Image 1 (cartoon, rainbow, N blue to C red):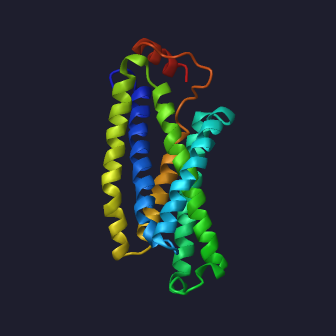
Image 2: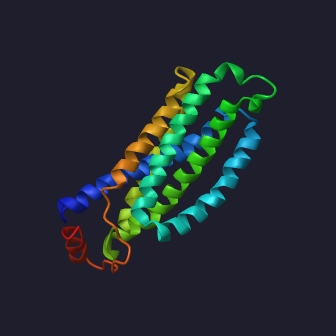
Length: 212
């Protein structure tokens, strides 16, 4: 925070985005029981969808750049989470039937949350590498450590958000999706790091942010 307003603002933004990452990721994972299918099947699908998320992140950072991957991942994930929540509410009374997937709305809701969590996970993975590139080598480990601390706080808050579904069934999905959208909008403020030399000192970082 002593090395320029730009770097300080980016640091606050990163702390928020990392917090949202764990809040949404673990919130959706722990809330899998609310989805209209067997909890074991849902967890299996969730685990399997992490694999394409890793591939999406790996190729997406090269194809679209770090900033666009993270921002679009948050935004798209948030929108799909909110969409799935709304569709779940409209079909709530039909989810106790034996053939729930005969209802197209329930099927769309289930697919939406799976895609949303996948792109959200890709943004979560991508922000690790992005954070490393936004700081000089001399403070990089400290920066990632503080951001990781913020992330763990988000993971601790997630179960409490899920518990709110006992009072308002749609609230957790709206909270997770809304924060994800805010993180996506905030991610557009990050400078691009593609093709830039590695920052070794704080002076390198000051010069980098001064020109952005």
